[in-house]
Image (cartoon, rainbow, N blue to C red; front, side, top):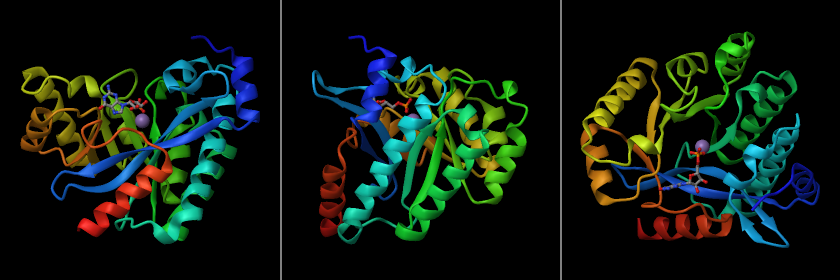
Length: 260
Ligand code: G
Ligand code: MN
């Protein structure tokens, strides 16, 4: 399936993009302590489209920003409409994906600050911007200053897909990362020695920098047992829930609150 950039642009104008939410759990309590907002495209002609089929096609400057703003506006709408019936744990973490070039753009940074402040004030939500792995921080000399200012304003970041692309220690340090998300390729084979060494390294880096560690793509009980034994505290993946529309997230949180 191939969508032209022009078709994607029309999709943004027509507001065809919707946020889905995938739970993040704390393995000690098994409680949903946050979620990642993920883009889905609801096309009239082919139904629901996964981001793998459109995100990388957004080349025109400003298009990814426009999509992120549209998704975030919808996300705010979701929470506003249902905040009264939404049992969120204190410090509920809501993550969304951004690219490095967006973070260093002053207007976008201002938008991020406003959004984070508003989500925190209105719902007690800790917004976390996940920086994706495809851009090299060394290409952005202004990044250090930008992250410094954002940190001073309380804007939180996570490094996404850590261990792939340009998502490495340098980005963790520069972004004052609140969280490190281990790429699912390191989670895939429980017991694998190389993966274990890598995860131990991530945990040490997190310890040094005060970041929390989230494992992505957890699918099986064996992976869960292994990661728990290694000391990874936060887990995300199909084992705990697929990305779902807001209604289903709300239903799940409501049911868990009743069950205790
Ligand atoms: O790069 P990033 O981590 O943001 O990618 C998230 C994508 O991974 C989403 O599109 C989501 O649907 C998918 N995903 C989430 N959990 C799992 C999982 O447990 N296994 C696999 N294979 N994919 C997952
Ligand atoms: Mn992500």
